[in-house]
Image 1 (cartoon, rainbow, N blue to C red):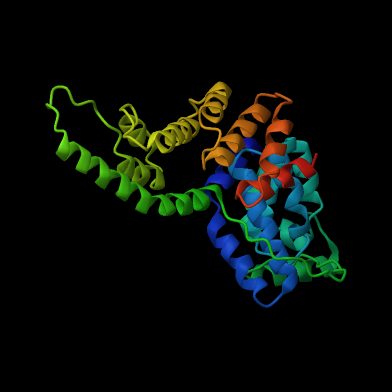
Image 2 (image 1 turned 45 degrees about the vertical axis):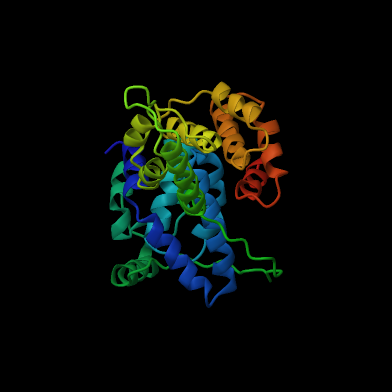
Amino acid sequence: MDVRTLADRELTELPLIDMTEWLVRKGEHDPTFRLVANEFGVVMTLLDHGYYSEASERIVPLLGMKVPAAFHRLGLALEVKANGKKAAKRRFRSLSPAVMNHADLSDWRAAFKWEVRWLGLPAVVALALAALAFWPDAPTPPVAPVTEAPEVVTVTEDEALAKRLEELEQEVARLEQENESLQAEEPITEEAAPTEVPLAEVESLVSDKRYEEADALLDGKAKAGQEQAVGFYRLLVDNKLEQADISDYAAYVEAYPESGYRADVLWMKGIAEKKQGDAAYRTTLAEVAAMEGTYWAPIAESVLSQE
């Protein structure tokens, strides 16, 4: 199998949620793993947005710890996406013999055309132990004393959006109730009534990642008081369907400078600028990083600090 094809398959099939939960459980008893679990959350966010180079760099410390083979597979896939086959092969060769010859890495051995050579009696013993163990025994480097730092809870973009959607439910219900009251007071003929965007239904479809269906409903007119929310969901859905332009994000920020979605829109704008090689992304992400209290502020600051 081609290395790039294998990398794409790994990023699609690896149980990333289970891997995150495994780190969290380990972190309940080991402060080092707690810090690593927080960092892994950042890796997942960077991966979601296509920052393969940054994600590949940030996962390196974790690969030096005693972790399941799935993490090494993820590290190899990220390195392929970030720096190509040769760099990924160098990372593979840096692994311990027990990890390199683990059954779960067989596809990577085949992709790199790796031949298992005689490694001497100690290596043979190590391989035998690895075959019996569920987790590969990667050598654990000495850990320097860790200064206690405030625990940073990171979540994926979808989790953040789900939380935001939940917060909107009550407001959406209230607005729809007010709109129904207005319609009852001033009824209009069916022929003259414009198609209005059912925000609650759009919210549900986006939460379920049914973006095409949500897109069809967003063609209508926003109800009174829902213009900012509808505009945001139009941008979000277009972003997911890869139909949004940088100018669309800029237009929203200009139209609604005080919008509660400003940080979300600027984050999407910064990502789009970076992917297009526009140096303006630094200014955009710096603005997001300065928006204290928002979900994207620490993530934007983290991305900028890696450059």
